[in-house]
Amino acid sequence: MAETDEFGEELADFVRRVAELKSARSVPADELPTVLDAAIFELDHVADQLWPRFQRLSSDGPSGIASTDRQEQQLLKALFQRVPVPVALVDRETVVRRLNFAAASFTGVRAGYATGRPLTGFLAHADRAAFRSQAAAVARGDGDRSLTVHLQQQPSAPVRATLTALRPSGEPRSAVLVVLQPADSRVPSGANTPGPAPNLTETTRHTVLMDLVDTMTTTLLSAPGEDRSAVPERAAEVLHERFADWVVVDTGAARLVRTTVLGPSDIPGPSDAPGLSDTPGPSDIQGPSEGRRPSAYAEVVAALAAQDPAACPLVVEAARGGSTALQVRPEDPDVFGRDTSGDPFLVRANVTSLLCVPLTTASGPVRGVLTLFRSGGRLAFSMAEAQAMDMMSRHIALAMARLN
Image (cartoon, rainbow, N blue to C red; front, side):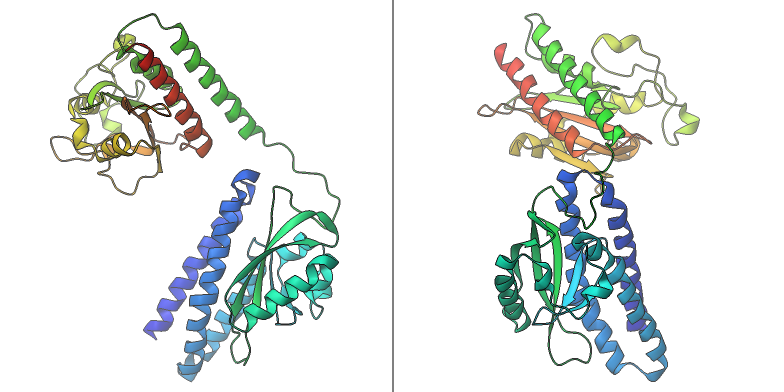
């Protein structure tokens, strides 16, 4: 009975992950392959783990669990239908046994019509022989296969078909699970429906991001001739609050030195931030913003300013490897080190997402590390923002190199 309960918990976790995948259908087209790969991984998990365990429980379990197992089987069938990825179950002759809702919409063929007919009948003639041959190889146990085919109704849009073997319960032969996904950004559809409306939110965020890049470039180009350390400080002022709640700058080649820490300037008092001191103080340690209203995080700012960058694993790794790090809801609270009382800085600063970017050119050494935090209810850093920050970091490094 304990094994049955464990199976039920694992199945419930799978259902939750499927719900998350369904909610991810609105991601931009260039990020869709990542979601599809995750969905394929979940299908493989069902085929390799959940289904064999279900078969074992069905054959070995006591008769009292039979009704529960039947319910689990019905649930698995329902999950197959609701998975937001086009999936078909065929035999070694490519005859369709099941076609989920997403596959019906993807191919433009009703599931009731497709069942009992070869899946190759819905492909372009030139692809049928290859698909049939690969399906037979997968069914006889020669391993998973993947090939590009074309749907007969949409011959101009290539489709990537991934095939994996699946042994249905109580059957002597293996079936073939087929996952379909667009091989490029175009998604075939059975109906001539108009494309999705532009995502105004994403468009706005892109415009704001381009404005930030323009401001950063203007600041770096218009900066007067001064010492090299002033360049990242000016860049930090551009990014502070507009792009990130916290900005931490460490400069140096042989040994990093913390030069700038900018923290939130308009945060509720200590009564709303448990564990933080109400001692007033500036919200940064350098720059023209020293007259800003004291922040409830002033003590955290001072502690960060006093931290040795060598005691910060994230900064050390960025300086050593020269690659950008993006973390959303960081799992390791110690990744940015601890203060003198032993409390993790990420916890004290209420960090919900972070970007750690080395200041380096394509061929030059690392001249410093720029770390950005977002906290509270602010949207997490996106991949697009990380790419833009990576570009700005190279511009900052070029400006620093110019003042050598």
